[in-house]
Length: 100
Image 1 (cartoon, rainbow, N blue to C red):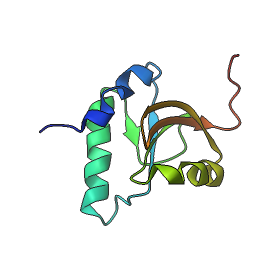
Image 2 (cartoon, one colour):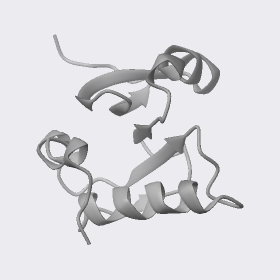
Image 3 (cartoon, rainbow, N blue to C red):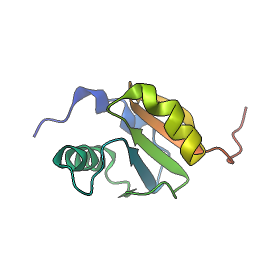
């Protein structure tokens, strides 16, 4: 199976040994496309553990419509940390303190 090239930069952006959350505009519960996106992301971030949750400190945002990123960040109180590709973003909770 060939994974989309947009994932290429993602592994280098990940904090070591962190559990990662997952957020997408494609639901994984009842949509084959959403499940595929989740499984592709899970494959790329291995050996990190990817949870279908925004609870972990770091969350991977994988959006089919990148222009929705600001709304997702606002709704879930997340901030972008790094961008791997349009619509593929490493996020963290807005309450986290980041070094300057």
